Amino acid sequence: MSDLLERLRGRGWRVTSQRRVVAEVLDGDHVHLTADEVHARAAHLLPEISRATVYNTLGEMVSLGEVMEVSTDGRAKRYDPNAHHPHQHLICSNCGTIRDVHPSGNPLADLPQEERFGFTVSEVEVTYRGLCPSCT
Amino acid sequence: MSDLLERLRGRGWRVTSQRRVVAEVLDGDHVHLTADEVHARAAHLLPEISRATVYNTLGEMVSLGEVMEVSTDGRAKRYDPNAHHPHQHLICSNCGTIRDVHPSGNPLADLPQEERFGFTVSEVEVTYRGLCPSCT
DNA sequence: TTCTTGACCTGGACTCCGTCCATCGTAGGA
DNA sequence: TCCTACGATGGACGGAGTCCAGGTCAAGAA
Image (cartoon, rainbow over all chains, first blue to last red; front, side):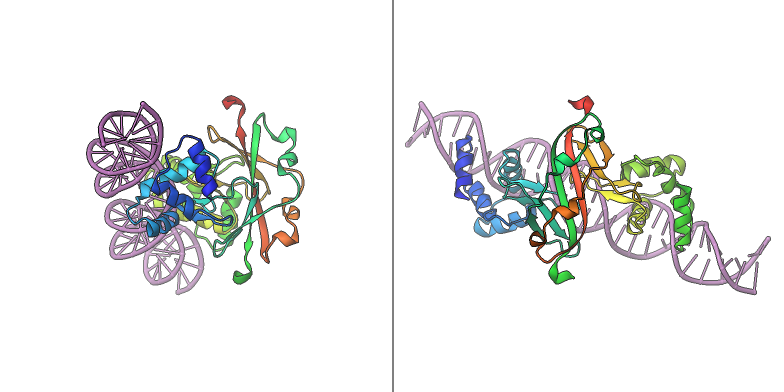
């Protein structure tokens, strides 16, 4: 994830200890943490970091396209650092576990012209729901 | 929508004026209101109705499968009475307008077995995003 | 029609998630 | 090393949703 910091620096970002720590927490490809979880883990590495800073940093990473925001259930949003590899999500309806998945096919092509109502459609988000092995 | 009330009565529900009014507000197939909007419209017909009652009633309708919950953007959930006709949603990223759409194909079949990680997958939710004609 | 009772409604307090803002601190260029 | 604009802080705030104790009423029984 240090290349994330490099990319951010390249975009004119100041690299502060807070941003470094948030990036470190998000390291790894299969992480789907809430802002509060990110804050808790970051505070473990840098105790004085504030909630507002975590929210700001996550928001900036999202608007730069480095991190994806996932709204799973209308409760807290989750942050997914695997933003450079297109994927969808499979969520356990019981315990909330999230997995990245790669469906075949192209859902964008599945929306016929006459069902677009003049919209310029640019993205599709597919969420699969079901029960994970341990909740079955 | 009076058949909704009939179905609910058939399930042992008491039909109260509050529930009648909520059902009436949700009447129509292309409505996607937030709980607060439902409350505002319901209060127009029955001024003393409380927010808690609207939330309770909507929650019950959802758990009976009579109404669908749509989490568009991590903000307020929306309630969609068109629950008996499978469909997906097309949302304007700018103004939030929602349309019901019917993609061809079956996205459930697009998730290969080896991408299911042992989950019992039961539903798929597809959300298309883009700009509506008036926001383009 | 009246009675009875448990399901339902109410309003206000509370929680959770997220944003805003005034002020202070500091990364990094000169 | 110094300067300063960008970033961090934390506390107040706001929106969405939940909870609860107590009052109300739909609908079946008589």
